[in-house]
Length: 227
View 1 (cartoon, rainbow, N blue to C red):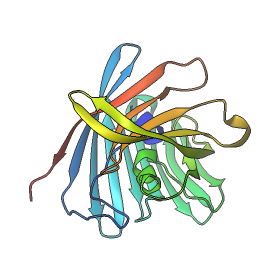
View 2 (cartoon, rainbow, N blue to C red):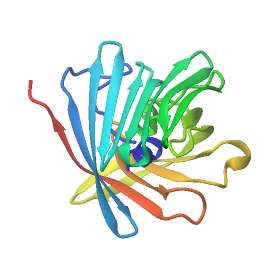
View 3 (cartoon, rainbow, N blue to C red):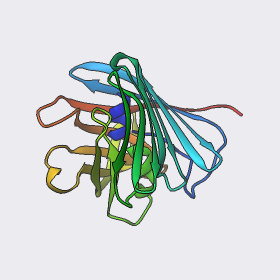
């Protein structure tokens, strides 16, 4: 769902943010997730608003909004899930993440220390910058939506090849993302990005810790609002 799409675990863009061709229109992305033979539709909307990019993700009763700067580093994140009685706002100030709101029915007002590395809450949006860079690896922070714990992740470029999604074929790059350091064996996600536009085409990875169900998320359609 949105949390996995954001951490996977997120996906979208074409024509928005850092140094690429700009558009003032909103772009809608439709993804489909398969977990334990269950199909979940995920809707994303991406727009450039002045000096920031705003990505809104809706799936079932989750709404997640990530606001990034033009380097695609996250500035603020809003997450609402009524079924879990969660409604939070997170904002980065220096090397701290300030969390306010209600999380799983309990009020929260906290400050989480990180370091100077970027915060990529919508990883597939933020990783677009990595796709087009000459870097072979990148380290960044993600705030886990199920625990609100900041975790450092490492993404590595591994291969390029042609992949097929539905009836279409794409030249794509495979990026593998894992927790950094001693936690590296606890989770692994694989992303395939379109080399031409940097759109996430497919994600595969577990929904949680080792032994949890596997998730596959694939792109279904991209629609741009008319001017």
